[in-house]
Amino acid sequence: MILDLILIFIIKIIQQCLRILPEHIQKAVGVLLGRLAYHLLKKRRLVAVSNLKKVFKDRDKKDIERIARSCFEKFGINFVEMLLVPYIKKDRYRERFSIENRGYIDSALKKGRGIIAVIFHYSNWEIMGIASVLLGHDVVVLARPLKRHINLNNFLNRIRSSSGLRIIPNEGTGRDIMRHLKENRIVAVLADQREKRSRGVYVEFFGEKVPTNRGVAVVAMKTGAPVIPVYLVREGFLRYRVVCTSPIDIERKGNIDELVEVNLRKINSFLESIILEAPDEWFWVHRRWGRTS
Image (cartoon, rainbow, N blue to C red):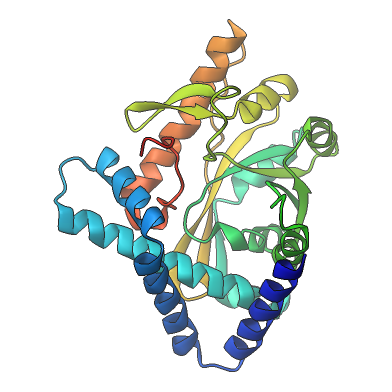
C-alpha cells in the first residue's frame, strides 16, 4: 500500500515535469530511462539477449546487443508517451495518429458478432486506446492486474483508459468477453503473453513450442467473432499509425484440441512476421520461452 502510494507520487511528479519540456527533450528522457534500465536491470537484459539469440541465430553478438539496447530505449520512450497521452486533446489526435485499413474493422462490425482484436507487446501497446478514438468505437481490453499492487494497478489503468479504453481484468472473464462480443464490441486481447505450463497449449513460435493461452482461439471458434490483428507502427515521438489487418482465417471444423493449436499457430505466425520487420519493437525482456531463457 505505502510502496504503491510512493510510486504513484513519483510517477505523477515525472508526469508533470515532462509536460513542460519540449518534445525532443521528452523523447530524450525516454531514451535515457531505457538506457538506464538496460544497464541496471541485468537479469532482464540477459533474458532479452537470450531470446534474441533464439530467433536470430545468424546474427553476431554486437548486432544482438544493439537490438536489445534499442528495445530498452523504445520501452523507455513508451513509458514517457504513456504518461503524456492523457494530455493530448482528442480533437488533436488526427494530427499525430492515423489508421490504416479501418475497412476491415467496419466490415467485421457489420456482421454483428463483435471483434477479437489481437494485440501484442509490440511498438507502444500501452497507448492502443488511441485506436478507439480513431475508429469511433469503444475498445474493451483484457489486462492482467498487478495483484500485489492494487493502487498502482488502478492508477496505471486510469492512464490507459484516458484515451478511450475500457479495461477489464484478465481473470475468469469468459462470460464478460462473450457479453461484449454479443453486444458487437471490439475486445482487445494481448496474444503473446506466456501462459502457465499447466494450462497452456504448446504452439510453435520461431521454431520452438511455447505455452500459449487458448482463450482467443476457443472464444473465436465458439462465437464466430472475427479475429483481427491490430498493431501500432512508430512514425515519430507520440506519432503512430494504427494498422488493422485482414481477419485471420479461423478454422472451426475438426478435432477441437487440434483446431486450437492450428488457430493459435496462425496468430503466432502473424506476430513473427511483424517482429522480423522491426525486431527492436517487440518486448524481448519477458520470458516468452520460459525460464530456461
